[in-house]
Image 1 (cartoon, one colour):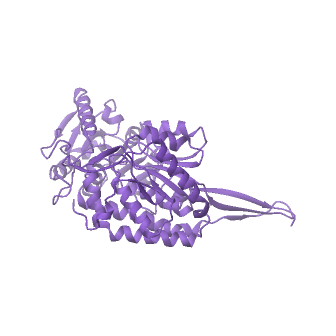
Image 2: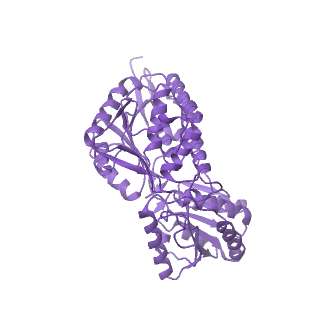
Length: 482
């Protein structure tokens, strides 16, 4: 990995604008090659407490800066991220594995949250409330909630970070960030650029660690932390939610998904194939909003599957830095084993693997783009996130059946469907029990739009003006004696 700006590759935790090493370290490896990139500090309870205390001290001044001042600093940070986009993309591909073009897209997408909230922080409006009694004036004001703990996943090591840091810092909060242990390097690079942009000490702190449960316990129980934002599995989210109850923290949880993608018989098949593939195979299927179940109406099944199979079979698998690669490696051996387990269960229960189905020759963590047909709700791949390049195909006959199948899950993050019937578009979009719905589109995430789920996929929003509300308190002020 040859970076133009070698300062972007850091190995120590970032606390109070200083790089803090620890005696213990752990290796960050390239999932495509298995080669070690660098050893990073393995912070524990003590370092996390120091980071929280630094953030608490910084909050006293950062929360009192003007919105314009915060806006200008965030804008400088955005400009530096964009100026270093090529290096950041290479760093991202090296530690996470996604193809370089996809990584560059994530850098731009991630930066858009810093840009959006640099603008949005100047529009945190309160209200004047008509008084019910003479001699009183009623109003509300918005204020930052305090120190924020942010815990991010490995699948989008830049975008998931900026989606939390942007609104938190714009609102006037300070942050302690714990990035995923598989992909801490992008977070450290962003912290380096934040310091270069002039973000004051203590406003952003990054704790790298392999001791996730220990650090997570500190972040969720420390009284100085007023808000937790977590993206990850529902199982872990429930643990963090329980731990946070001891200090009644405000929570934003973006948890697991089980996204249906419905192909109705009045869909434009070319559009449906393109959109469903974009949703399913982006990042080798390792996204929380991936199309986990593809539901195809019976009378267009053959035509759709012919076009879909052809498109999937043409996907190039390999190292993300190689030309024309669209499917990179999975993040680790555990991910490979999960896919094997789900495919074994599905075939044992009657499913048929019509394309792929095994590890790819590109390396130990590569899996073939796969299609599984004759799937049923009883199969584990219908109930769990596959998190890999595997399409599970279901067949339905009626609109009512499709909606029932789609909603038959405790999760409610994202859903997709394809139809050219405007009446059906409105009716189905309203009946799907999900926080986000893509219609004739497989890529739905934008800084300007609210991102978040319902049911066991969590609560809270990221992106849009709703995203900053999660980092603000609404204070009511009643002035009497007038």
